Length: 166
Image 1 (cartoon, rainbow, N blue to C red):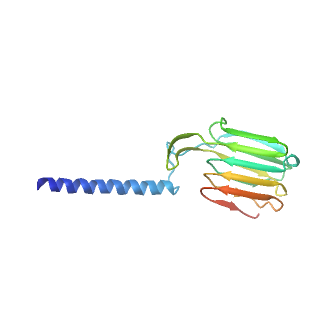
Image 2 (cartoon, rainbow, N blue to C red):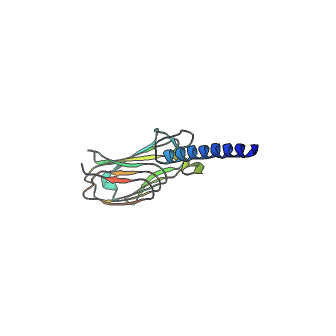
Image 3 (cartoon, rainbow, N blue to C red):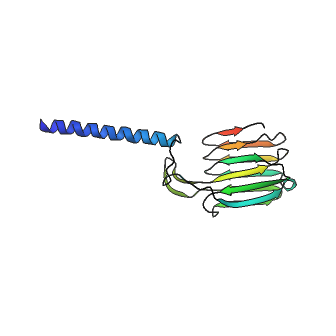
């Protein structure tokens, strides 16, 4: 009979621990908390390239983890800025009027997307750009300005995409 009280107490303590862990995971997955040891983010500019708008008729962006943001510029060129820790997994190049931006992730510890080194891409582009833009983003949000003359294709697996009019 004395052991039954101990077993009931242990079950209650275990239930409390499980409840706290579930609440913690839900809170983290909803974006309410960013733990530097799990979700590392660095806002250092690691790569910045500028291209003449007339040279670029097709833009393709492949990103595994991070936000992609298009911002309007009054200049006649397209500027690509990459943020992160290092540029070992990043490439920005142009060939045959096609601007390719590839940015992969470095996985440290993958469990519910923890351990992803998040990397962001910001593209400064004139609103009169009239080419084609293809975006593939596996984890992160996409924000695109109103490009009236451009064809924009977005393939996103996670989070949200937003296009707005200025």
